[in-house]
Image 1: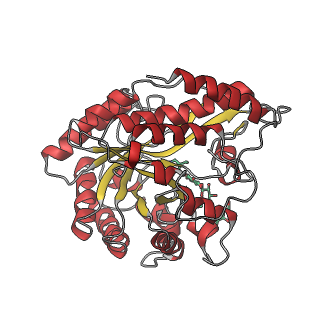
Image 2: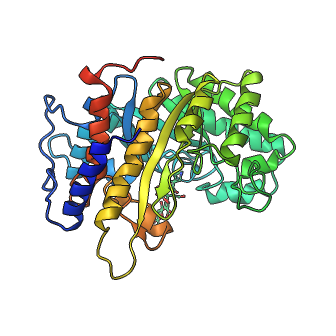
Image 3: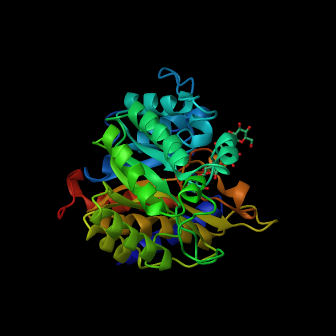
Length: 387
Ligand code: G3I
């Protein structure tokens, strides 16, 4: 249930921020990270819920100097208990040539996380995007067995390198098409090079990918992950059926991740909690894995309106509240910060302001709404009941 006071407060705050009147508390360089600094997302989160952010190790964390951190690095360490490598563990970055692995970006994320007692979400092992050219070229001639051999080597090498240190893996990412794609909601047996080579039985390949990951890292919780997967819809119906099939076959599937890439151009799907609850009823963890809320900002408008600022906050908070309401929701990750680092403007021209921090690391009303919800959910930062 929306908290009426918070909506009003967000309205007032939103007006001030949009008007430039309110200089957010941390609009200067963020305060020194102090262990006593209690009022942060990671410290206000329940003990059984990790609050995370994506970070691009190659861009943001290489050369990290604990005696001279960047403002970005200080906020990442201060606010988040979990990091997802935004690109560093994707095929194109970590496996650029056949038999050649480049762990530099991923290692930078792992080193930073170790230094700041943060968890790491692995991302991602099986996806139709960001595959290196050698995979794209070779896959045209692959037999299914050849595809399986390449994928198995990759999974065992990458998952094995960080075994015991990754708490959740996005094993299979965006493996279903959308309603609006040719053929509607079905497995991506054309766009995904591995599913394409094994189009006769793609579910068997998906299941084995989870099995290989589980064999080399029995501790990691293994997830399906996708966008447009927040509410109950034809796509999540397909994931729900796939999850049942995989579980019935004894596949070590442990979680379902909804990416949470929203836009104010569309409404908010209020069936998000019901969707989380149905996957939880299968015995799965759920997670919000890549939350951001794109804001349409037309040419000539130099920033969000007060109403857009309020809606941006409400949408972030609504996703977090759905996660807090379902004890099986184990992590909530925002897809990077500040706005200057966001993928959104490159992909959605005319939309921006998607993250929870401004470019001078000022926390937006969305940050304050999330902090308030975390503070309200667990007095004393205790675990939620009901797991
Ligand atoms: O690494 C090259 C670099 O060598 C080159 O100089 C540069 C030139 O533009 O490109 C770099 O590659 C970029 C790549 O990120 C880095 O790995 C690509 O241009 C860029 O398009 C790519 O964007 C990423 C996008 O996934 C690719 O689909 C975004 O940073 C990343 O935030 C985004 O994240 C995805 C999730 O993984 C899955 N869910 C959707 C989400 C948004 O698309």
